[in-house]
Length: 336
Image 1: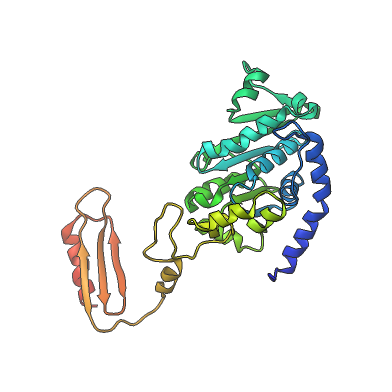
Image 2: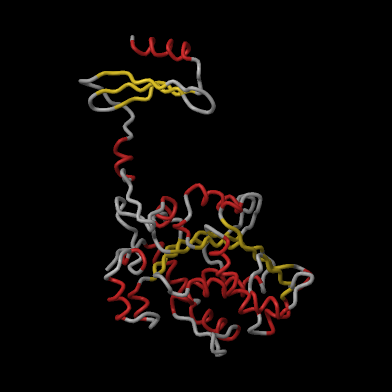
């Protein structure tokens, strides 16, 4: 049995106390594809709870593929923005991915009078067109006292210039560390903010880091939970085991750091290799040579490397195309 930190266990117990009320809320407000009252599973109720009640400021969720995360997130965000005057952003690597959650939000606006009456279509839009095409990038809901609930979608690179105190980052592991930083900065000017990262655990610096960060509420929904909740069959699991990436997409485990990623790239150096290579102080022995590459023009750098048998040291790196200037540095380096 997994040994979890006490804080994580307390958080999980707190989430469970809301499970029935979240089931009831979704059951009363929303309908499934057959027009019947929505019935969320336990894990879907917990995801709904985390968003709708904003229990924790930082959240890291891993789910097996085809679990129904986009639907659940969409329902929770819709229930929230039609009740509270808040701004929410759904971000992902591209707008098409973020648009999946938005399409679920649009689809279920019309499930009940509560959300439908508060929804404010853009000028020129008809309810029927919105219901049919589900292709809006931004939705507004008019609440009491003229206040608005709002949700919009963006890709990670498009997050620059936008701000939102509540951010859902979908398929978070497929977004680079630099792009994730652009999304995270959206929270910057709001002291009370909410960040929700969800996806499959592909190798990712930021997604792996938040998985290990005790400041984040951590939740994992693997195939075993899917079997228990009857969202997947054992036959499907056995078939998936014969295919690549089962550990990532069904076990919800990060791949070994030296394993290939979802695009079949295999890193020449793992993060552990790089960490071991970064040594602050070391004494060179054996071979002692200088290597120089002089920049020709443009944005290239002139570089001087000192190479020993056991390691290499960067002595000089500068945007300096003047051969004479670099030569002087090289002479000084040779006599050190």
